[in-house]
Length: 400
Image (tube, rainbow, N blue to C red; front, side, top):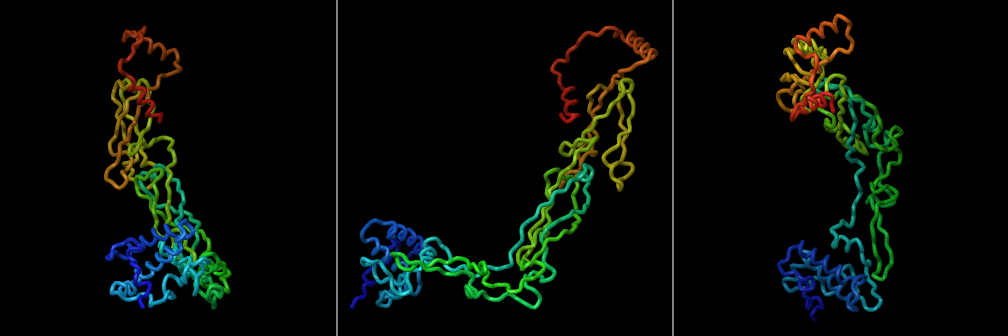
């Protein structure tokens, strides 16, 4: 007698060619199962079509059954007990024989999920940690090694990360028999629907620690403060981060630590203003010195470093005669070292010429005599065309 399965073209049921790959078969099954499932379809024969789709997938996704079918044999052995999850026919009551319908198997095939998660490991990687560090301008410019206080989880020294007290160890969970998940069965018109979820007794680990470590309460880690010496490269600026691998939080169960990030902030300086790799400063020059020319000793940023070369802590700045207020003089390679690069920026010095506000009689007479010699007793207003550079320089010098 010809088996009823032999007259069914499983490839046609799923709508795939005979040389379809396993992935094509799985995708076709997902598409057809969603289309003809009795909960979705409204056709009266939806249950029968769904049974055919299940049967076709049962055969074609199994290499051995597919080979038997392709050679003209009966892959289901003449009965329905071994195929399609134990269907006995839908009839009017739509019930199932055997072990019932495993809902997780349908989800696996349709969405690629795993029907059994299995116990999850207690050992997991720790989270990354972030600390913030404020630097002076000199520290950021020239680099420094600074101690950083870190408060993170570290491995428990008493249990070495196992979470169990001395002389004990985790035991298999009796609720889930060490599987890590439990299966619940619910009755429906489709039959018995089985779903799996993490075991509430062991939280999915598959084991229980009957005697937790008194130091870490079974976590395998404790919080602790420690000090790390962090090397700051020259040229960093606000917002830069230093990455320290495996210096973050130790994971649960004594798992490998995450990484530590040190976020930098550079404090404002009372004399220097940083502009990229350049340093800017403003110095005041007396009116007579600006008119006659002079030399001024300037302390550089290196003056704030005890280990710097004394020759680099000061520079003599030549101010030429007739220097105007707002003049900027640039000194090459006196700025900030370039991060991950060679060379340094420049030190920009803006001169602010000061006019005296208090004069004694002798000084006033000397200035009046000077104005007569220069024919400057009366001054006409004079507007610089296309100007603005003077004010721009002043605005920039003061950080405006």
